[in-house]
Image (cartoon, rainbow, N blue to C red; front, side):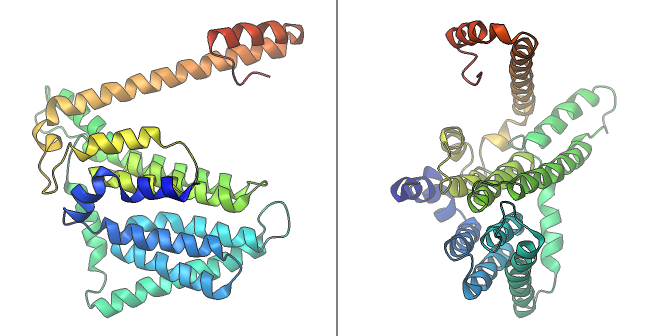
Length: 312
């Protein structure tokens, strides 16, 4: 990843000045500690001081914002990969990574909690953030749309809590799947863990019950270090930066309807488009498997149609 591109993505975006600097948010501190922790662990994955220091930085990030907790299991994988001599990460590597990174992060979080003198009141604060109901969050938008329809028959009907609960379950499954996939990577487990951390943050932002424009900086900052294409995230970031003002006012508050139904319809469109594409791919693969002699003909036809780039 060219450092110049990473700097442009993570530091020179429109959200930095408008929200992280201009708005009263602590995301900048969380992101700084998160990136620093991952950078230390990635650069020196076998150095005990670096492992403990990286874990402490990640623990500090969690103390600022609990979302940073998502990256810690992937930092454990980075260390585990460095201590593993086999193709796949083994139990010994996982134990070393967990003891170093997770142990230091937990100790740092506990120390900050005690030193702050506020006990564990921040846990209730995390729960209270879900009281914000805005269509910028995909699960919340779906819940709001169902609520609008249900209230035609029952004025007290509210589907938002149920849809959010379902989204939490989907998110939990997605996070486990992303972590296991990174764990099973053979070619470059360390890089896979870093990419997994970025993917986990993307899933968290997409399925969170609350979404605010500056949240797009969480995945964008990590994606900047992976070399992955970030065009879609950048477009969302630019659009989102103008949807909400630093003081919290903006479109998501004033256009709940038809905002929520429009978001829901767009999600349905994306789902149908994805299913159709997967169906075409399965049909093409089935034809190739059933008649190997047609492989060349099908490859030529699908390539001309712009559908068969991945067919071999």
